[in-house]
Amino acid sequence: MKKVLGSLALFGILVTGGMVYADEYDEYEDCMNYWNWGDYKEAIKAGKLAIKKHPKDLGGYECLAGVYRDSGKLDLAYETMKKAEKIAHSKEDLMNVYSEIAGILRDMGKLDEAIVYYNKSLNLARNLKDLLKQVFTLENIADVYDRKGDLDKALSYYNEALNLETFEVNKAHICNSIADIYDKKGDHQKSIEYRQKAIGYIQQVKKEGYLGEVDEKIEIGNTYKRMKDYKNAEKYILEALNRAKKNEDEEGEVYSYIALGDLYKDMGDKKRAKEYYQLAYKAFKSLEDSALPNNKRIQVSNEADEVLKKIKELDKSK
Image 1 (cartoon, helix red, strand yellow):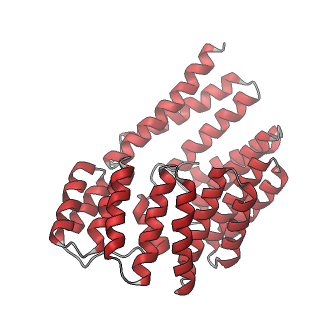
Image 2: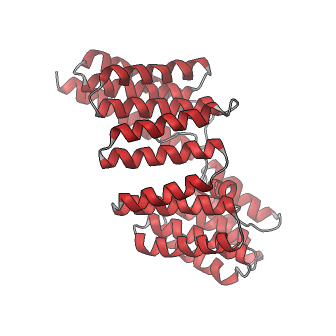
């Protein structure tokens, strides 16, 4: 499930992989701020200026490459990070630069090359005994194998990541990924088993757990739907919706509405399907009118359009 208010790509790396950036200076901060606000044009200007003024600092290269990547200019992102590779001399710097290059190559569809760079990063992470980065990289390698269609290898890397991970919330995320693989393999019972494990991990983290629990219950419901077990599918998605409402989780509500719409459409109940799609569309439009950064507002608008298409398709099928 795609979250509307998710972090920017590089911020995820900063949290999970400890991406290295330059000492504080205005141009770098400007680049990061503009990127966060979704103003790619100004972010690119600031990133270029940061590199010009501080050509031996990685921060400008990493921010500029991240903006290029998010704005779909993958060739420029790759070119920028290859320049960063030349000035990255410490093992930690290289580990993070290799990881970013691998991610860009994955986005470009150059999956075999991406694996090469992820393995370079993984080897350095092992050498540095950086457990956090090892888990992060193992998950990324698993994702690449998933994209290649090698589901058994993907499972192998996800399981290795799960065995190394120590934080419950991250274990839940990995279990969710494993469940997705089992769904693709057609082993829905195994998928449900791992989604239940994910919920168990999430419930151990009281503060932030409810958000993840909403996602997992929706996914369990969707898995039951694929198995044509509509009773259990409805049970879990309604639980997700109630939990989201209780915690005033607007995103959780909107995705629960979509899941219920999809479920009732599968069941042939077009009337109820349309009702829930309309609730989802209304909720998306409400989010769109809220104080979101420009890039997130565009994403919300696109997702609202997708729901509107579902409604129109139902109307046509009458």
